Image (cartoon, rainbow, N blue to C red; front, side, top):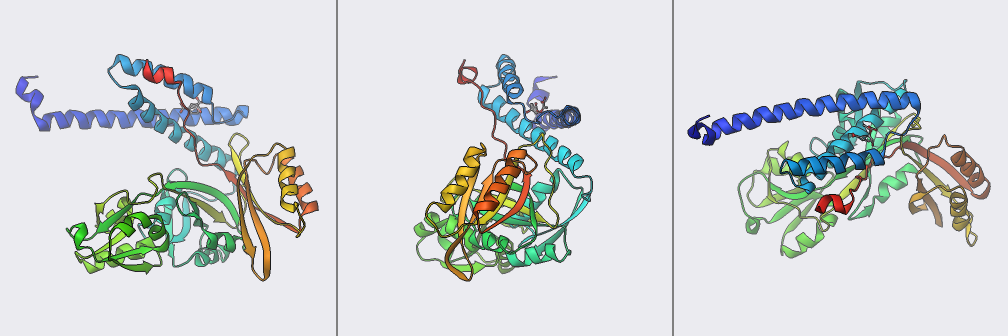
Length: 395
Ligand SMILES: C=C(O[C@@H]1C=C(C(=O)O)C=C[C@H]1O)C(=O)O
């Protein structure tokens, strides 16, 4: 290659594009090999996740990367992403084996808002490794989502349940008290709030902000600093984005994700405007029938229960879980409608409903509560990255 050719931007970019294509081919090859690993694990009933193997792999790759001039943090973050994808893909595969009656590859899913809402993005992400086609059904309210699934109009409903910055979504918790639907899955979606506009403008010109109530709460610090701005509450982020697109006005903006906004030709005027930089929402997926969770996958079970009004009644319930060695990962309480000062407790535990200890715990809880119901058992979708020994990163 001549010097000129070596520095020709188009030529260099062509080389990069070719390499990227090769990388994609390699990613796909690795993915299909890990699917064979899943088949082998299904056969041997071994857990999907093997953190010792992951750690050995990362330590070796960091060392090999250094020999090639790649820094340890780069190698670690690339491979943590690859491994996360591999584990989630294996889990999704084992779930299809455990639930042969579930219909794929086309699914219909109801979510809040329309194209571009966080619920829309979560639905697409969740089904991206499970279904080939998604029939989208944007709804106006959480109650409508449940109703669409209950009536058989759609297969699934995607509902946000908690957010790392604004906490639990009470309306969804309350609706779960009265539904016969089961929770069959969960997904954690990063929420990256931006201030989006339809036309080129600057922050000082913005007079009106459209958004759903949740993003307003989650961006309160940024909004407080902006002085006098009119706030327009919308039913969903998607509705707010559609409105701002329609207005084509340099004085209006909307709070939403850059990814969602791009579906409405909006662009980010300000990025990362949430109070917490690590802002995530957890969504649950509901369906008419419960699912079985494969033994090789970490499972979560959600139960709701009401205790009598006597001292220590809740503690007694938690002691049952403690004695069975079952880890509780969330406890939430909500008033019971029509019964002032009585509470419904929502409990998430890290256990599979099929486990004998879990069955025993539910039997015991049945004996000491006024009401108990299992809302669902589903795979834990969150993958904590395996950490590498600090020596491997620094040496
Ligand atoms: C592929 C495997 O399953 C999981 C994914 C890994 C990977 O993608 O490299 C490594 C270990 C496991 O947590 C395996 O066990 O080899």
